[in-house]
Length: 614
Image (cartoon, rainbow, N blue to C red):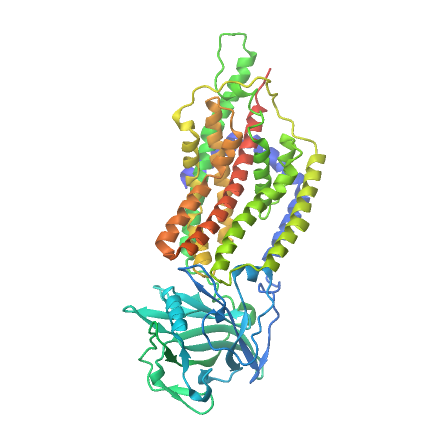
């Protein structure tokens, strides 16, 4: 802490005039700062409507409470299925699938009614499903084999009550409660497969008024009960002699089972607006804070290194070059980054592709940060507007279409229907492309950037480079610190994505995102300075690759995560996992590469505008 204090004090002493100038600029921008502060206040207001966006539903005692099925999921196959893909009991009448939004369809949700009959605040001790005249349900050999396969693949069943997902409560080592999505279809013990054929619903309710309640919690306890233990009663009610024996499934033969359920209602002091708190409670605050503090320390020391070493060196170089221009001694020899001033802003190879990628990166970064700077005005290329609008979406569409075909071949509910594909294409042609065209027009109406130095007509020959300026070494080295600053949060994000866990740590995620941007910008400036110091002016693409190098570590970590955490089985699930991982890594590469490029670009402009060039 003492070191950080003196580093900050020395940095302020060196750059006090710049700080005063910045303070004057902030005074001029007080109107915009006030609007920003007002916007932040709106974000933190706690009287806004609840996140799920549905109105609270009030149930009177005895009124029907509908249980809906969502899908079947597995962390081993990553292949969602419709609830009735398996031979569950069908409800009376027709199947009624809910009209879903685009996000639910892309997630593979297929919300449908079920035969579970619940009434508010009326407990159910035991009720049979699809057991006419108390006759057991017969599962054919094919149905039995399908259930056995899905149980071995660790599939879970997801149900909904009043838009609240059913969860299974588990206990952590520290004694705190944790919740898992859905309930297990079955389990394997000593290589024998057992089916969870009985589900017990625990529904938490909050009393609004006399005999009027709201649902604030939904837990499921799945059990495996042997059909030999059931005692059918009149109607659909039942009981059992013992819960000690489980219901096995034998492969290749007909299995006779009972499907049953029970329900209990528990009063809860939890209000309806807080009913998601138990689902979304943060279980590892301390480790998140330790990781963030560690990342901040890394960024502070990296910034201190740049401020005290690089910036001092740059200031000394600028002073030296300016004295050299004023000196009458012609024998003094120039060296370093000033020598490449005539080539530093020479357009790079494949400039159009670079601008397209950077334009996409600005769009991605703009989802979190507002930016008004367009690189389109720098390299002046008319064909860029079409490429920027189509390059990245085309890549996403092609890869997504291939993955969708793989999912469709496996009859998964994750298959995106043709109507949804057309909706996505309509959004692309009617929203994305027109907005890019509008941005292109506004960008080219603005005055283009004027570089601080002129570009020579004949390119300068790049001298022999030292080993540390090698592109592979610089890329591998520059991605380490940004990745270390965010890898812990990446673990929780992957857990939420691939293991069907809840993720609600958006405050931590925002802090980590800011740290990632800062560390990426600092590392890019550091690498580009050393590149220019050895008289190599090919910095355009290098800055982008250096900034996006942490995406390599993200992809490598995804491989490690798949091997150590998921145990994915089957060729198609592995292709799906790595296909989606490639999409994530490429998106991350473009976003961080854009940050690295802009940081390097403004750094280069700054240092070359500070020296006297004849």
